[in-house]
Length: 452
Image 1 (tube, one colour):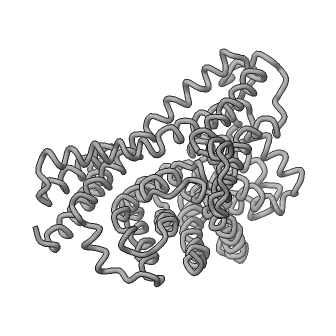
Image 2: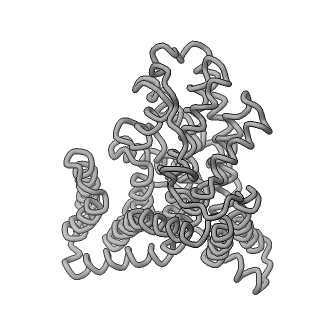
Image 3: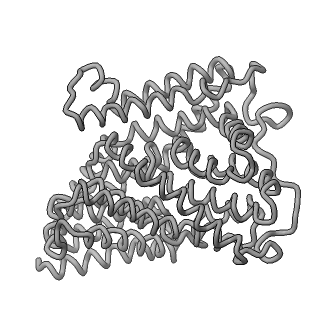
């Protein structure tokens, strides 16, 4: 089959996936598999090779990140029921004061709390942000909503173990420790600069509380963990100290980072190699978090937390897996070699095209995770021929997938309702705010390309 026919059929497959998800509301998992089937058959792979590419691609990505996703979600489930998140926000408020809280809260969520499923983290943190907003004055709602939107969306694609970050690293075969380190280099300035830019614009007349905020009502209360209607039955009244609650997760991330640094300086230590392996490190983090949960929640509540975490992880695992299906078919179809001829190595152009591809997919699909996974699947075969470090491709795809969070996003509507914004207000804080972060993130990515 000619190169042109393969390119056309790939475009049709991607367009069909977008149409099935957006127009016909088909589950993304089914849409991605159907798209992969069409691409394999239309490019001449045949039934047997197409099915083999799909199943192999699914298995490869599950082997790469399956346990990591599961461990991360389970850690987050236990931390949620320990009330660690809302107590951390209260601590930040006391330490940094209202004026600096949007930056402090944003950076904390973006870099440290990504073991929590995004919607769960948003539902926990949004009522706290809304309650704090009046302390920041006239533009409090705008500032807190913007900080939440930017930090939540950036965190899932740049920070390990965010779902998008794990998928991007797995599909592009980037060592997780490497992605963790370079993701932090990108996300810290991105979140800080983006919140500052949006604060400047919003407080200079662009935000109108009368039009952009809903009439004042009693904010939704945070999830209750004690008393009637509690989420979990706490069997002990003693709360876990924050350092103890977050300690196992922090230790796991430090172990992964230590392994990456050891590789960078060519240090070989078998004990460090074992403990810094991402699967082992996150397993240790999960075990430690469960011990804390057993002590401060009780065994029955801990079991309930883990059961909820297992339910949450199923959808995430399937979605990441089908991203591997699409990548497997694209690889077998030879698209990487074809597209590689259109890129020139050692320039900014490939990374900008990666960003643009992910951005277009996100505008069409409306999901950060799906667009990042789809873009990574399309780009995975290109990594060897581009002459660009795969971690840069992964980060650029993550940055592009943030562009224009809009009305088809569940995160958009959660932020709109939980923060007391009108749709017009949410378009400013969420759609524009995260789009600014998408563009700003390419600065550190392009800077890294000069040294990697």
